[in-house]
Length: 241
Ligand SMILES: [Zn+2]
Image 1 (cartoon, rainbow, N blue to C red):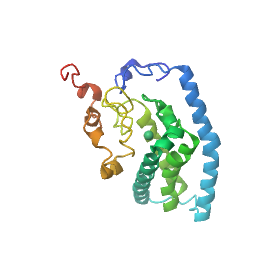
Image 2: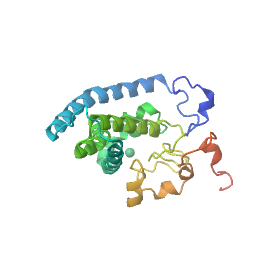
Image 3: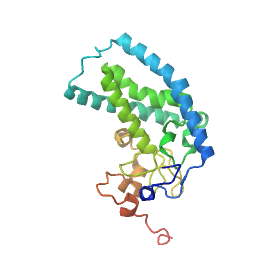
Image 4: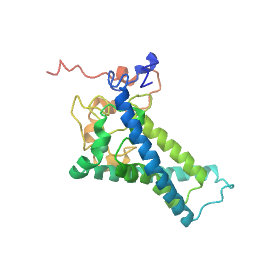
Protein backbone atom coordinates (compact mmCIF):
# COMPACT_ATOMS: atom_id res chain seq x y z
CA UNK A 1 0.00 0.00 0.00
CA UNK A 2 2.79 2.41 0.89
CA UNK A 3 4.57 1.70 -2.39
CA UNK A 4 1.59 1.62 -4.76
CA UNK A 5 -0.63 4.18 -2.99
CA UNK A 6 -3.51 1.81 -3.67
CA UNK A 7 -6.28 0.97 -2.89
CA UNK A 8 -7.54 4.55 -2.72
CA UNK A 9 -10.37 3.59 -0.33
CA UNK A 10 -7.86 2.74 2.37
CA UNK A 11 -5.89 6.00 2.00
CA UNK A 12 -8.70 7.72 3.94
CA UNK A 13 -7.32 6.07 7.05
CA UNK A 14 -3.87 7.69 6.77
CA UNK A 15 -3.14 9.55 10.00
CA UNK A 16 -1.08 12.19 8.22
CA UNK A 17 -2.50 12.36 4.71
CA UNK A 18 -0.06 13.34 1.99
CA UNK A 19 2.98 12.08 3.85
CA UNK A 20 4.94 9.25 2.24
CA UNK A 21 2.11 8.72 -0.23
CA UNK A 22 3.68 6.89 -2.00
CA UNK A 23 6.92 6.36 -0.15
CA UNK A 24 10.16 7.25 -2.00
CA UNK A 25 12.00 4.10 -3.15
CA UNK A 26 15.37 5.45 -2.00
CA UNK A 27 14.09 6.07 1.52
CA UNK A 28 12.38 2.69 1.55
CA UNK A 29 15.56 0.86 0.44
CA UNK A 30 17.50 2.44 3.30
CA UNK A 31 14.85 1.20 5.76
CA UNK A 32 14.78 -2.30 4.29
CA UNK A 33 18.58 -2.64 4.53
CA UNK A 34 18.60 -1.54 8.19
CA UNK A 35 15.66 -3.83 9.02
CA UNK A 36 17.39 -6.81 7.35
CA UNK A 37 20.58 -6.02 9.27
CA UNK A 38 18.65 -5.93 12.54
CA UNK A 39 16.75 -9.11 11.75
CA UNK A 40 19.75 -11.14 10.58
CA UNK A 41 22.97 -9.79 12.11
CA UNK A 42 21.34 -8.77 15.43
CA UNK A 43 18.21 -10.95 15.55
CA UNK A 44 19.68 -14.39 14.79
CA UNK A 45 22.47 -14.29 17.44
CA UNK A 46 19.89 -12.90 19.89
CA UNK A 47 17.58 -15.84 19.12
CA UNK A 48 20.49 -18.21 19.68
CA UNK A 49 21.35 -16.68 23.06
CA UNK A 50 17.63 -16.75 23.96
CA UNK A 51 17.45 -20.45 23.17
CA UNK A 52 20.53 -21.05 25.30
CA UNK A 53 18.98 -19.15 28.22
CA UNK A 54 15.66 -20.98 27.83
CA UNK A 55 17.42 -24.34 27.71
CA UNK A 56 19.36 -23.40 30.83
CA UNK A 57 16.07 -22.46 32.52
CA UNK A 58 14.48 -25.72 31.37
CA UNK A 59 12.49 -26.12 28.17
CA UNK A 60 8.94 -27.42 28.38
CA UNK A 61 8.26 -30.65 26.44
CA UNK A 62 7.40 -29.48 22.95
CA UNK A 63 4.60 -32.04 22.36
CA UNK A 64 2.64 -31.12 25.48
CA UNK A 65 0.71 -27.93 24.91
CA UNK A 66 -0.18 -25.67 27.86
CA UNK A 67 -3.89 -25.24 28.62
CA UNK A 68 -5.82 -22.39 27.03
CA UNK A 69 -6.34 -20.67 30.39
CA UNK A 70 -2.67 -20.87 31.25
CA UNK A 71 -1.77 -19.32 27.90
CA UNK A 72 -4.16 -16.43 28.63
CA UNK A 73 -2.65 -15.94 32.07
CA UNK A 74 0.90 -16.00 30.69
CA UNK A 75 -0.10 -13.60 27.93
CA UNK A 76 -1.21 -11.06 30.55
CA UNK A 77 2.16 -11.35 32.31
CA UNK A 78 4.08 -11.11 29.02
CA UNK A 79 2.19 -7.95 28.07
CA UNK A 80 2.90 -6.35 31.46
CA UNK A 81 6.59 -7.25 31.49
CA UNK A 82 6.99 -5.84 27.99
CA UNK A 83 5.14 -2.66 28.91
CA UNK A 84 7.51 -2.08 31.83
CA UNK A 85 10.67 -3.11 29.94
CA UNK A 86 9.85 -1.09 26.85
CA UNK A 87 8.76 1.97 28.82
CA UNK A 88 11.99 2.30 30.77
CA UNK A 89 14.38 1.31 27.98
CA UNK A 90 12.64 3.72 25.62
CA UNK A 91 12.55 6.53 28.18
CA UNK A 92 16.24 5.93 28.84
CA UNK A 93 16.93 6.26 25.09
CA UNK A 94 15.50 9.77 25.26
CA UNK A 95 18.38 10.83 27.48
CA UNK A 96 20.09 13.71 25.67
CA UNK A 97 23.27 11.79 24.85
CA UNK A 98 21.70 8.41 24.04
CA UNK A 99 19.08 10.10 21.91
CA UNK A 100 21.73 11.77 19.75
CA UNK A 101 23.92 8.67 19.41
CA UNK A 102 21.29 5.90 19.24
CA UNK A 103 17.60 6.75 19.19
CA UNK A 104 17.60 9.67 16.70
CA UNK A 105 17.71 7.21 13.82
CA UNK A 106 14.32 5.73 14.71
CA UNK A 107 12.81 9.21 14.89
CA UNK A 108 13.98 10.15 11.37
CA UNK A 109 10.54 8.96 10.29
CA UNK A 110 8.01 11.48 11.55
CA UNK A 111 5.28 9.92 9.39
CA UNK A 112 6.26 6.27 9.61
CA UNK A 113 5.15 3.24 7.64
CA UNK A 114 4.87 -0.26 9.11
CA UNK A 115 8.33 -1.46 8.01
CA UNK A 116 10.03 1.34 9.96
CA UNK A 117 9.04 -0.39 13.25
CA UNK A 118 12.54 -1.81 13.68
CA UNK A 119 14.39 0.85 11.68
CA UNK A 120 16.80 1.74 14.45
CA UNK A 121 20.33 1.45 15.85
CA UNK A 122 21.34 -2.20 16.63
CA UNK A 123 21.81 -1.37 20.34
CA UNK A 124 18.27 -0.02 20.46
CA UNK A 125 17.02 -3.11 18.65
CA UNK A 126 18.51 -5.37 21.32
CA UNK A 127 17.52 -3.43 24.45
CA UNK A 128 14.23 -1.88 23.40
CA UNK A 129 12.75 -4.19 20.76
CA UNK A 130 14.03 -7.70 21.46
CA UNK A 131 14.70 -7.85 25.20
CA UNK A 132 11.39 -6.52 26.64
CA UNK A 133 9.17 -9.10 24.85
CA UNK A 134 11.64 -11.89 25.64
CA UNK A 135 12.04 -11.14 29.36
CA UNK A 136 8.54 -12.35 30.23
CA UNK A 137 9.03 -15.54 28.25
CA UNK A 138 12.23 -16.21 30.21
CA UNK A 139 10.58 -15.30 33.50
CA UNK A 140 7.57 -17.57 32.92
CA UNK A 141 9.54 -20.32 31.16
CA UNK A 142 6.89 -20.20 28.44
CA UNK A 143 6.17 -23.06 26.08
CA UNK A 144 7.58 -22.43 22.61
CA UNK A 145 4.01 -22.28 21.20
CA UNK A 146 3.05 -19.56 23.70
CA UNK A 147 6.25 -17.68 22.88
CA UNK A 148 5.53 -17.83 19.15
CA UNK A 149 1.94 -16.65 19.65
CA UNK A 150 3.19 -13.80 21.84
CA UNK A 151 5.97 -12.70 19.48
CA UNK A 152 3.55 -12.75 16.54
CA UNK A 153 1.07 -10.55 18.42
CA UNK A 154 3.84 -8.19 19.57
CA UNK A 155 5.14 -7.85 16.01
CA UNK A 156 1.63 -7.20 14.64
CA UNK A 157 1.13 -4.58 17.33
CA UNK A 158 4.32 -2.69 16.51
CA UNK A 159 3.59 -2.88 12.76
CA UNK A 160 0.17 -1.38 13.46
CA UNK A 161 1.67 1.29 15.71
CA UNK A 162 4.09 2.41 12.99
CA UNK A 163 1.76 1.91 10.00
CA UNK A 164 0.54 5.50 9.85
CA UNK A 165 -2.95 4.06 9.30
CA UNK A 166 -5.73 4.24 11.86
CA UNK A 167 -8.23 1.40 11.82
CA UNK A 168 -7.27 0.41 15.37
CA UNK A 169 -5.94 2.67 18.17
CA UNK A 170 -2.43 4.01 18.04
CA UNK A 171 -0.32 4.68 21.03
CA UNK A 172 2.83 6.35 19.83
CA UNK A 173 4.95 9.04 21.23
CA UNK A 174 5.61 10.57 17.83
CA UNK A 175 2.53 12.66 18.38
CA UNK A 176 1.99 16.10 16.96
CA UNK A 177 -1.45 17.11 18.05
CA UNK A 178 -3.01 15.59 14.93
CA UNK A 179 -2.34 12.05 15.81
CA UNK A 180 0.95 10.52 16.72
CA UNK A 181 4.14 10.44 14.60
CA UNK A 182 4.38 13.93 13.19
CA UNK A 183 5.76 17.34 13.75
CA UNK A 184 3.61 20.11 12.44
CA UNK A 185 1.27 21.35 15.17
CA UNK A 186 2.79 21.18 18.61
CA UNK A 187 6.23 20.10 17.53
CA UNK A 188 7.74 16.83 18.59
CA UNK A 189 6.81 15.97 22.10
CA UNK A 190 9.71 13.79 22.94
CA UNK A 191 8.80 13.48 26.58
CA UNK A 192 5.47 11.80 25.90
CA UNK A 193 4.09 8.29 25.48
CA UNK A 194 7.09 6.05 25.94
CA UNK A 195 5.10 2.89 26.54
CA UNK A 196 3.11 0.50 24.39
CA UNK A 197 -0.24 0.37 26.16
CA UNK A 198 -0.05 3.60 28.12
CA UNK A 199 -0.16 2.00 31.58
CA UNK A 200 3.29 3.17 32.58
CA UNK A 201 2.77 6.59 31.00
CA UNK A 202 -0.37 7.11 33.06
CA UNK A 203 1.55 6.06 36.15
CA UNK A 204 4.42 8.49 35.47
CA UNK A 205 2.28 11.24 33.96
CA UNK A 206 4.18 11.09 30.67
CA UNK A 207 0.91 11.17 28.73
CA UNK A 208 -0.39 14.56 29.93
CA UNK A 209 0.26 16.43 26.67
CA UNK A 210 -0.98 13.54 24.55
CA UNK A 211 -4.22 13.44 26.51
CA UNK A 212 -4.83 17.13 25.84
CA UNK A 213 -4.58 16.73 22.05
CA UNK A 214 -7.09 15.78 19.39
CA UNK A 215 -4.98 12.65 18.87
CA UNK A 216 -6.24 11.39 22.20
CA UNK A 217 -9.90 11.55 21.21
CA UNK A 218 -8.97 9.50 18.14
CA UNK A 219 -7.12 7.04 20.30
CA UNK A 220 -10.01 4.58 20.38
CA UNK A 221 -11.15 1.44 18.64
CA UNK A 222 -13.26 2.65 15.73
CA UNK A 223 -16.30 0.43 15.35
CA UNK A 224 -17.47 2.12 12.16
CA UNK A 225 -15.62 2.44 8.87
CA UNK A 226 -15.49 6.24 9.03
CA UNK A 227 -11.85 7.32 9.49
CA UNK A 228 -11.13 8.82 12.96
CA UNK A 229 -9.81 11.98 11.25
CA UNK A 230 -13.31 12.59 9.85
CA UNK A 231 -15.13 11.73 13.10
CA UNK A 232 -12.83 13.95 15.19
CA UNK A 233 -11.68 16.68 12.78
CA UNK A 234 -8.87 19.07 13.60
CA UNK A 235 -10.03 22.27 15.25
CA UNK A 236 -10.25 25.18 12.80
CA UNK A 237 -6.80 26.70 13.09
CA UNK A 238 -7.87 30.09 11.62
CA UNK A 239 -10.53 30.61 14.29
CA UNK A 240 -8.07 30.31 17.12
CA UNK A 241 -5.80 33.02 15.70
ZN1 LIG B 1 11.44 7.55 21.04
